[in-house]
Each structure stands twice: as C-alpha cells, then as structure tokens.
Length: 362
Image 1 (cartoon, rainbow, N blue to C red):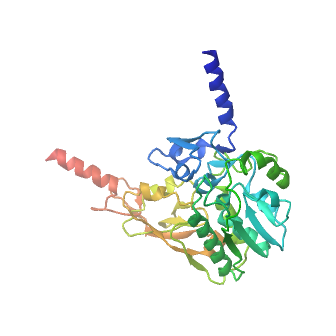
Image 2: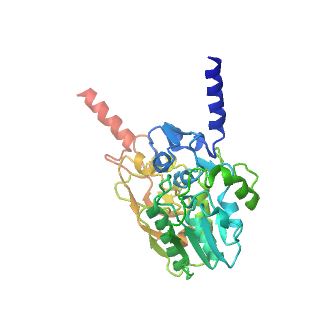
Image 3: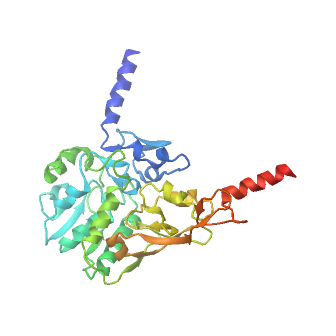
C-alpha cells in the first residue's frame, strides 16, 4: 500500500509540472453552466487534455506545443516557460525569419527562431514578424510525420489571413510555409522539455507564466496580440476583409430582437453592451469579441447572426457600433420604460402576468 501511495504522489508531482497550465476560472464551461466548449481537447495531438466540465492536463503526456493556447477563446491555457511576446522580441529586424520547432542544430543561426510548435504561432505573431522582417518562413519539415498531427490547413489559413491583412495595409505579403521534409520526424522531446531551457535563455524568460491567469482579463493574449499587430500598421488601404471562421468576428442583430439585453449581460469580454439614453440600443465592439458564441446561445429570439465582413478600421479604432436600437416607451402597468411593447401597451412581463390572470378569472 505504501508503494502504491508513493507512486500516486509521484504521478501527482509530474502532472503538476506540465509544460502547460490551465486556469479553470477563465474556462467558459466553469463560468457558464450551459456552455460546452471542447476546443482544447479537440486540437490536442498528444491526448494530454481531458474534460470533466473543466479541462485537466496530463503532465506526462503534454509536449508543450501550445496549440491549445490559441484555440481557447478566453485564454485559459498558457505555456509555463515561454510567451508569444518574448518570441517576437527575439526577432532581428530586417532579416529573414524562420520559425521552427525541429531544426535545433540551426538555432545558432540568428534567422532561426525556435517555437514550441508552428501550431503555437498565431496571426498576430506572424503579422508582427512580417512587419519588421524581410521574409517570414514557417518551417513545417517533418510535421506530416509528427505524432502531434498538427493541422497544416489551419496553419496555412493563419498565413493566408496574415498576408491578407498585410496586403490590406499596402505591405508586402511575405509569409510562407515550407514543408520540405528532410531528416527524422520530431518526437515528443525534439523541442519540448529538452529545449525549453534554451528557448528561455534566448528570450530572457523567467520561466513563469507570462500570459494572464485568473480573471484579470478574460480576453486571450492571442487575441490582444492580433489587435495590437493590426493597429501598428497605420491606416488600411482596403478596409474590409472577409473572414468566415475568425479569429476576428462580426455580428448583426435582426429585427426579431426585443432588446432584452441578455446577450450583453452574458458576454464574457464586454464586446456587447446595452446602452440607454433616449433610445435603448445594443452596441458592439469588434476588438473585444473572441468568437465564443455565448451571445447566440442565450438569445431566446435567435436574433444574432454572424457577418463575414470585418472592418479593419473598426478594429483599430475600437469604436462602439450600434447594432439595433429602439425608442424607449412606458409600460402602462408597471410604468417601466422599455424598448419594446408586445401588446396592449404592456411590457412582456406584464403582458404575461395579464394573460395568467385572465386564465384564472375565466
């Protein structure tokens, strides 16, 4: 029994030293009972993430690739030993940049920038790197044989979006993916634990979580980095780009909306807000939206619809846009001012109460 206890305790120590940390307080499944988000579990090629309402990480299986960091809409995941900002800060301006997780022997070459996995790279990192470099290459050599099974189509979509944004600002579209496979396929420790100290020394990272945890900011670092990267490019030449699946999101509200405001009340980042002056309106800030779709899930009128058109100037300005508005009117029964009168000049609550009373009086 004592030996079994020691094994369990040892396993606990190993699990607690996973290369990836998770903040359960930031997880949508924890914050909202009706949400079932499993993006992290779905993309984990090492099968290190399991879900029981909130995610848990098997420290013995986690490779520290960081792909889960990108897909989590609220930034609940973070790598313990490196951050996106430190990787970007290590880039030498004016040169070709090669992001790679495999070619360790070439990391003495200043053009090579080590990353946990090219799947860890996000659009904001690519835009930042491209804006200061002659050329940006993502080294995908060996990825087709890697046990993590990174979705190269997703990597290519990130590159395409970053190039589209650069082109919209009149910049050179200088990001490309290289998949010429030579040598052996990377293994779990090809980058991971054996090279994490090298990367930490190169970037000057202290080894602590540099990405937010807890509830200080529910907007993920990946999203904030993208907004900052776009904002640093000055004024767009072509303002509107089309995105069907993020990482920027736009919405429209249809006439079925009764301006109840539950979407604004439930929005975890405050991208939607209810404004009341002479009119009641629902306003939207595109730079805050993380695409969690919680607003659509709670809308009882099914009035929220995705829009593919993304205005880059709206992203840069972070202005509030009114999606729908209505003049405030007074309910004749409760005297409250509301935006929508359903029938008999009564608000929805009073109208329901009146119907119930009539049923009992009949």
